[in-house]
Length: 314
Image (cartoon, rainbow, N blue to C red; front, side, top):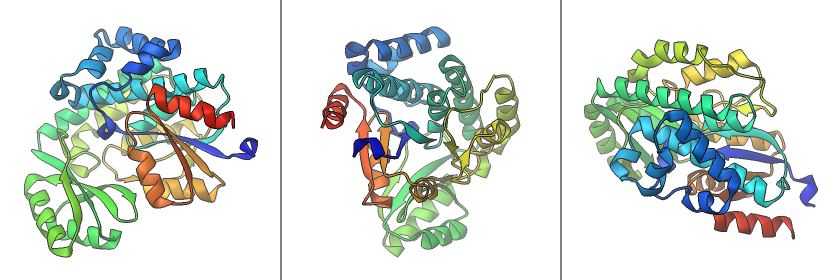
């Protein structure tokens, strides 16, 4: 029965962005419109216009794309709740991929939307600043087991940034180390070796110059105990303690995202159904690869919300 569903709401990171995201939600749902309007007012410029119309080069800048994906993901959540009259299965966990953790905190009423928008824009600024000093980047790879990928990183001097699925990772490093890692991965038979369009080697020790400033930035904001546990990126474990959550937000900028572990831990604790709230279907695809038996729904547009509403009505 639908009532017996144990659900988790998950929120994507900045790689899920695209020009046009959230626009149909803004048009069709008052709750989504209020999200974008609030973030625009908070940041003092039309982030919504950047989401809807681009240009792509400006949208994908770290300082813009992080609050943009945050706003769009919260808008997806609000629209889904509005359309279903709050009839979605209540989550027992929230989880976000990398910066999606901030969206999870908003969803759990642990931080206000306005504060999250300000904080994540500062996060983007600090990470971008640290990244520009290294001339590094990130590369997504798939098709090999995790131990082989770890050995490739060790040999190349790169670092694992995301462990997303049993055969998919993203690595960070200097351009020299990434070039070497790509060559080694090709020799080993890796598939889909894709450089990411990011401004630095995020989720690696190369971003450490931003660590203390990030800690200081977080200390200036008010956090509340989350209404639902937040599953951490760094450990994959559920968090409710505020100090532990703040430490997660600091350390995640230099530590790898353990997404596979986070999903597996939620499933081990009874989750059968995942709702991805955010543009595109990045996490939906990853979850199906981690656990083919899991039920996964993507909520990214008015059309997908209509499909969810029909599903709930049977």
